[in-house]
Length: 294
Image 1 (cartoon, rainbow, N blue to C red):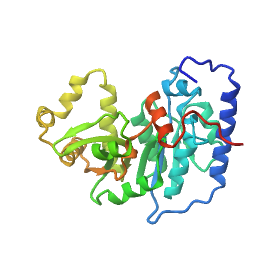
Image 2: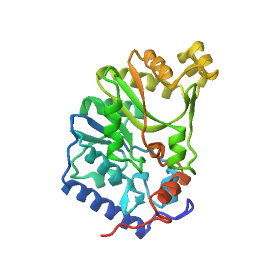
Image 3: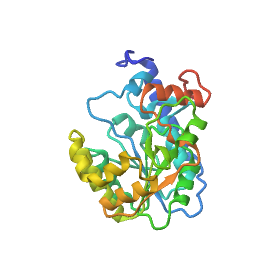
Image 4: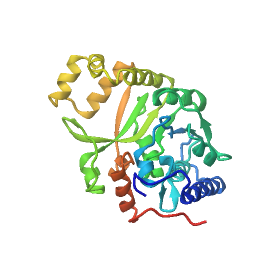
C-alpha cells in the first residue's frame, strides 16, 4: 500500500497484527542456542514520535515500522529472532506504541518505556538491563546473529564504547543499489550500522554528550563548538582516520571509544525510508509485501 492508502479500518492491517502476535509466540517457544562467552544484554529501540506517522510505515500500510512484513515475519520478530540466536543474557525493547506492547505481551523480553529522546531511553535501559549492553533498532531488517557476535569479538578489550561501521566498498559489494550516508575519513568512507556497545557504566558519559547534541540539534554551530575547531578542521581537511576520529570523540565524553568495521556490508542497510524497504525486499527475494502464513 502506498503512502496515500487508507489505514483506519483496514482488515489487512488487523491480519498483520494477528500475525505479529503469532511471530512473537513462535519466538518464545523456540530453543535459543547460547553463543560462547554470553552475558551481554541487548536493547532494541522501537519508539516512535507521538502524533507522527512514520513514512515507511505508511508506505507499507501499517501503524508502526516494527509491524512491516518481510519474508512472512514482522520486522520486530525478525530483529528479536536474530538477537536471540546471538545468545544474549537478556533483551529489552523500548517502545511506546500500544500495538508493539501488545505484540510483546508474554515474550521473553523486558518491555521498557521510551523517554523524551533516544539517548535517555538508552540510559534508562542500561540502568535496568545492565552491562555490557548492545544497542540496535527495530528497523534493522536484515540483522543477523553473527553481526552481533562478531561485533563483540572484534571490539578491543580496552574500549568502554564501540560503534560498528561498514566500509563503503563492502556496502556497495553487498548492495550495489543502496543509497547510504557515508562519513569520509583519511582511510576511506564508512556508513553506520545501527549497532553500538556500551561495555560499562563509564560508557554512559557518551549518552550524556548524546543528550546535549539532541538538545542542540537546531543549533548546529553549538554542536560544532562542542567538538572544537581543531577537530572540525582536521575532519574537513580529511586528516583524520576513522580510528583517530572515534578516539577523539570519545575523549570529549571521557571514555575510550573504538570503531569496529563490519565484515558484511549489508549491516549498513536499515529501513529509514520507503526506498530502503523496497531494497531489503529485493535483497531477500521479495517483489511485493507478503503475508505470513497462519
